[in-house]
Image (cartoon, rainbow over all chains, first blue to last red; front, side, top):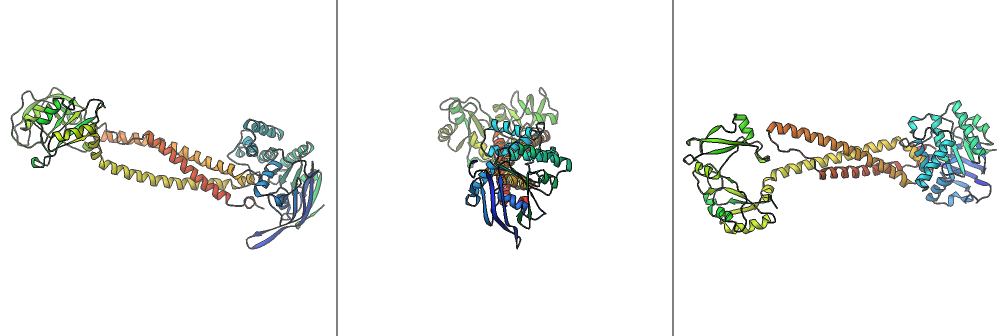
Length: 228
Length: 310
């Protein structure tokens, strides 16, 4: 599957997305176009409500466009079933959220193991891989800690480790530094740069100009449209 | 079969006196003693007082139950005076011993002391020689009490023969009613507990709805997350069940200690059996799983994107 679609990991063409908020119909995207290639580190910037998160959701197959096409590793996401899209997200997409969204009853290593378990990786292997991921983000001494026992920065690093667990084609991060202080945000940026240098493809939606400047490439979303 | 006993009881309406059935039983005794069909290994006799005046038996000896002896200050080796009727002649009796009365719920609140006699002494004292109201026959191992009862009854006209299990069954009707009442209370409590547990689980999963939504967005299959929720609820419920059993054992011990002291008896008032433990844990796990399914269904009813926030 990795080979499909050549160098392009995911491409959105003239996508729009409408949804209802109560009785009101909201048009979150009005024709956005973006292409993400292997080893990209793309920052998606723009004001609040401009459609950055919606674009990320469409790129990751979390949501489908109202019009337009999203092609992920050569496959049009609109043609896939709900289960097939879930499987694609599990194996090919890593998601990082602003508020981490770690399962509070699981330890750091168990949170990282979860996508591996869902992918039916054998127990011993997934434990080793999860431990290696946490070591990669500098949390080798926090494996058995639960999210409530970790700082915000540590939680976000666990979330990044979780997103990398299944060696995805792309990691999509939505405001990953939104809940973090400046120093911790810099550490997260450094981690992203390190991961990207090692071959991980990243798309980051952010308000954080420092994070955006640290990316290799940048696009802006304004009023639901992308600008290079 | 040792310990299984067939019981012969008089059923002669024409000989009812003082509200109790009586049986002229020498023939039965003779049958049993002769070991014709069912050899007698031990027998006991109880009879009703009818107020007839009678002579005192020679060398009258009795055994007196411990609680009464303790209350009345009677000790083994002492003497007591007995009458067959309130206006009868008193007879001096040697207290040959004090015995611990068997634990019998039907005698729990009884105020009359239990005194054991040699059968001939009692018959002489009561003026009813050769008569008994009922007696028990211990069967040899291997003899079916029901078969023995059916075989004995035709031999004794007007006599009812019952296996002790049936006697116990008839005597415990009241307790069965109480048991059913308690079972109903237990059932209502379990249902209420299940609803409570479901509420707790719904609240718990609500707390983590965004984390679960994020996992769903990440492609974690619903069955895995549902499995987690159900397993957690079942574990929580099982732990609650174990704690409940602990409380049950403790409460049972307290109840037994209190009432055994209050009634001066060895009777066990409250028991927690293995079946209860197994049923309790099973019900707890099933209720927990049900609560987990309810909570999970609520959790998965909403679009994860809505839960995360678009």
